[in-house]
Length: 73
Ligand SMILES: [Zn+2]
Image 1: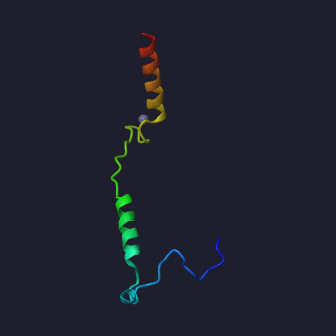
Image 2: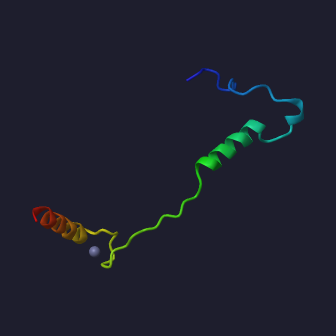
Image 3: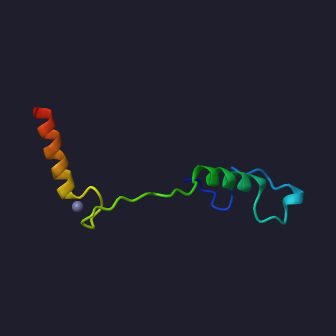
């Protein structure tokens, strides 16, 4: 960690016209990047008929039995 707690060396000196702005143009650009990279997503959730998340352990076992039986044919 740098021992300059009050300095922010990564930011250029504020321009005069930006003196009273709460956020800089760079902040807005970063915000745009963040919003672009983090769009909301709808997640479809599968729920088994027995109430557990699909596939539940019973379904997993049944699928394993089926795939094993098919592999043996
Ligand atoms: Zn189930």
